[in-house]
Length: 509
Image (cartoon, rainbow, N blue to C red; front, top):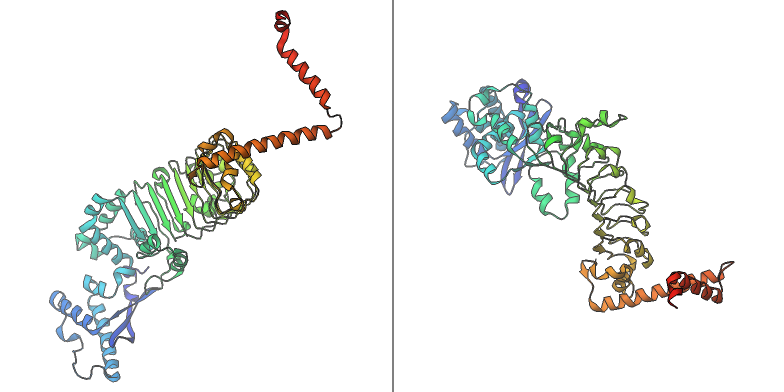
């Protein structure tokens, strides 16, 4: 961002061209402050309104502004002369107002959008007027990464003269407001919130906003770093489309935060979130620093990123209860055995094909969402004995016998299988329910309980299957070397009956 206080002598203003829109001429003003530049467009009427304010309130000479012309004001020659005269006018005003930089001049040139000092003062003035009323309704607020960067930079700068001259601009208004917030949303730009929350086609928007210059400036959101130490009681942190590594200091968040959500930030590793304020140093250490644990975090949502693995820094969330990793590029899970409180895990829309021995890592899991992956086999889920809700919809399960592995889970109540090849078979629902034996009436399959017809058919199918299994075992025993003959089986049965009768049976006869 620009810092006019630091680069006042290097600040320049020019009008490189005229833009005509619907027969109206706009003068494009180019402002350069240090390495930062931006443009702002104004018609002559805007210049006249600014000049009237400067004349009445700032002692500017009335004849400084090029006069208005009614006839011939569309000719190229006239417009060129006016362009040069307006450029000279702005340069003279910048020199004359260099020290005081009145608000009307600041906002005319959009300093309040791209300059650290003036953006912070603009925000402070807004919070001075409306901050208390806002907090009375909600302790949730959305910041652009530009605002957070400006606040972070302002903390390192002495109080500017323009701020001391007006109490409305006092930086303390921002600090007090931030210290009371419980939820913040971090966005690439201020106007991206409605797009993210309400537009279904957000996949196209966020990566674009992340790398696109902000407004008419050369500032890029992905390049702006910020800290969060001003938030003293924050409980919920939601980040959309902004790299988590841009956070320089999380302050007290490792102690206070109970929920963190990171969306579309191009994050590739968990360590970029868990160790966001020192990822390159801490992630390389052999032993994870326990002081970096997020001690009260219960809910973690890392959705629509670029995660390929669950690295060991997931251990820094020891108290997390629900973990959402939807729409990433995961092929397996790892290190989740360290999350002893984990009850809900969502891995929807990843690249998972194998679930081997998942009970070793997910011993206490209650809800598991594996929809829209590449799963065919279910044996690895067969020992998740605490599981109540299981979503396997839109996978590649094509063998009804795979249901046997989850049919014996004692607490399972909700099962979703729609979108699998097996769900397209004849009597699909009855065939699935038949695998749950006496518990079939407790099962919600694809969000619905079975009806009586399905239950009756399921019981018949279950009986036929059990009978077929017994016949198969019997045939198998006959074909095995040393297998028993029918006569031998009858003799063995009589012997067992005699043994069960015992001595008392003989005395009674």
